[in-house]
Amino acid sequence: MPTSGDLPMIRMGSVQALRATASARVRAVLFVVLALVMPTRATPAQSSPLDSLAARVDSFVARPRLLVLTDIANEPDDQMSLVRLLVYSNRVDIEGLVASTSTWMKRAVRPDVIRTVLDAYAKVQPNLLLHEPGFPTADALRALVTTGQPGYGVAAIGPDKMTPGAELIVRAADREDPRPLWITAWGGANTLAQALLHVRATRTPAELDRFVAKLRVYAISDQDDAGPWIRREFPTLHYIATPSTQDGAQYYFATWTGISGDLFYRNAPGADFTTFTDAWVNANIRRKGPLGEHYPHPCCIHEGDTPSFLGLVDGGLASAMSPTFGGWGGRYVWRRFYGETRPSWTQGGDSYPGQDNSRDAVVAGDGKTYVSDQATIWRWREAFQHDFAARMDWSIKPRGEANHNPVVTVNGSTGFAPITIAAHIGVPIVLEAAGTRDPDGNALRYHWFFYPEAGTGIPGHPVAVRSAAVAATESGAGNIPSAPTGGPPPPRPRVTIEGANTERATVTPRVAGVAHVILAVEDGGSPTLTSYRRIILSIAP
Image 1: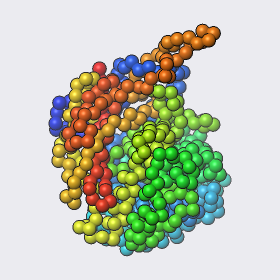
Image 2: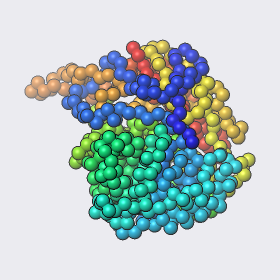
Image 3: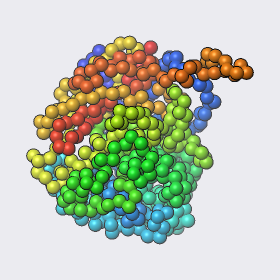
């Protein structure tokens, strides 16, 4: 069984990756804070006893553990997400598929629909194995299908209301395994609430703490009233969500809508909807064999639940290590959302230049820059949609007729784990992708880019030390201080990159702090496929 991987460490001036364990010391280097004068405005201290949890960066895990709570059959999108998940089932260890309720389906659970999709998977699993190892048998997955709370929300939990789904959560979390257990809530969260309630009632506080520390939750908003209850009752639980009412009226704001919500919610200017049009989906997903036949048409948006697990399979972005990293599943910051009793991984933050917030600035296909929470997902859309399409090809085609992802090597290190580099301001670092290869012999295109927002959003761990407020440069009427002409200046780039579109790039640190550089390698196959590598620089003066 795979365990936490090691993080390669490269010292400046070396061209070989040195293996180093992903210890607390190495993970802490991701957030080294060193001197920098950056103009910004002063803000009141907002530290919390829970902020130390926000600073936790998990070890890299090659194959994460995953347990799904799904209100499948309430609308088509859960079934769509399940189809996608199954063609990635060799990249995660699925430990439960739990049929649950939600505000959209309050008194029924539908494990039969999960089993129907698994019947289709059984027909293609042998073909998937022609392309990559590790796809579980349909029977192995069928054994993990069960039911959660049969009623709605916290009214359906209690001391005598354990369900097979809640028991499965407890058994999975109790398993001797160093990897965290990801629980994704595609619907309501009350089955998780029941498991937590049971553990709290039957174990010591220390045992409860150890249980909670194993869990990583990503909920698609609040689809019952259990999510707010869990966050209030178990404040040390790693919980990613956009708190919301249970009626869908606030889904418009949520990061997860960046998966495909452009047309329905009209909330993602700059996003390209091409790979979610009926024409594209029909040609690349629905017409691809037995699983494709079980990919329905949406009533609202495609795959609203998929962001909850996309970050576990994002091809080298390794965003599961921290919600601040950013990847296919979006990017989040640690803050106390209005109305909540505790901070958690969520959206928001100050938009003032240099302050942390959950929005990415992305240059879209029209050449304009767009800034939004949804952009933290749609910026990767072509890559994750092409990746899905290729895997649907794997389900029906021989290996020689399908495309496969590039295998990325950076400075001699191959794999998906991030590389950390100790750097100094003004001292160039050479990053080489020599040895990167394409399994199908396709030509490769390289793109190195600085991801300025990555790693931001952890209280007490800024990516760069900030100075006092910008001094007023002039006075207006009545001697009221005025900001500088043109407004406050943006932060300086922490690194610059030469040779950004070549195999060999030179990165020059310009500002002390932490900087994430991403290498994207795209092949020339059909569909084009992209693999990534994240390089994290800890920059000293």
